[in-house]
Image (cartoon, rainbow, N blue to C red):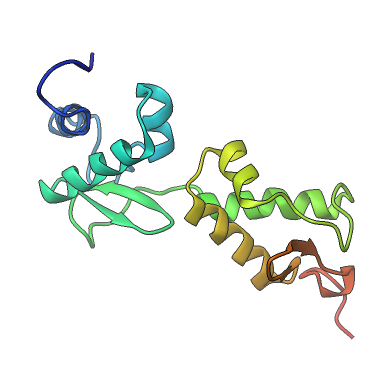
Length: 162
């Protein structure tokens, strides 16, 4: 239980809870630390507070962060536990599947960063990585200051090559 009225900042209290999970062996080297979005939801805290939790764990030498993938127990270079594909790739695959099914037709906008952030509970950088991944694969193109749109089917990665 967090003491919201006491002298110890919330981020330190949460970092201590996670450190205790590590010490008890509930979280092992290479395991992911709960994401910022999960900490926000579970403990009703602000994103900045959740970020401070990860920073506190890094400063204590309990965890390390890989941008776009998350924060993990242990020191950098430790093997990570087998994970699903990175969140941004999962989001990109879901959007690509909607494009394949025709839910988002060519030359129509895909969901914006704010929608992705809300729907998937991710940070802006993760939403941007998902869009960049879709763009790199050929699913979408971006028009500066307008948005990101579905590319024509002949540009899609599974299109027949001549």
